[in-house]
Image (cartoon, rainbow over all chains, first blue to last red; front, side, top):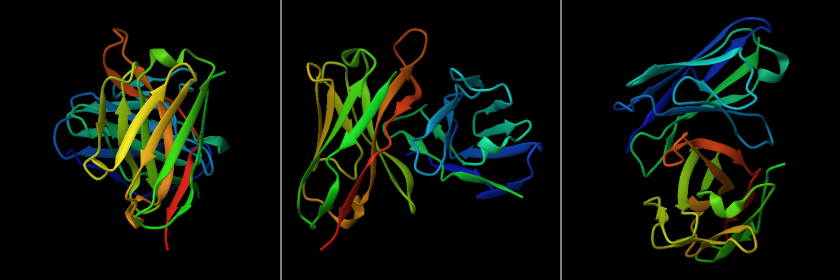
Length: 108
Length: 124
């Protein structure tokens, strides 16, 4: 099973600032990585797939990069609605599909 | 509008059973693979099971294999998860999710829609 590790666990950022979230895989997952956003009481929302492809309706301030074992989600200028928990997920080798433990982006 | 609405969760004793349902609307349900994913504060998001468009193929996480059964009724646009021999480790919010595929339609690239989930609590 591929283990996904996200860092940091919590990221404190001021509105308008840039946020950089990291995700590491225990073995190469090529570019088969997705990112999700989840707000309290809501279902997760797909942001990025294929490491860098924005899902439908996702604003351009969200960008993904990386391949192999190291991945980054960048939010270029944080808006109030972006404060949430973010998860990465690999789909290169499954089952099982595996998720990272999440990064909570909170207001500084 | 695509909607996935789970139901059937609740409090159950260890060793008991529950059947979860996921009612789908706003899309051609029979055209999509569907999954169950569970979520806890401690373990985060954990994949549980998936099922093919016609229900002929299914797979399970090791932790639930032999105890859980995924199924679907395309005529009713509904996905199910039969959970037997439940333990405290199965306590979680259970989400159903629709698979997004690549442009070829053949490969999984993520979940483009999720339900809000139904809470299962296993406790005496």
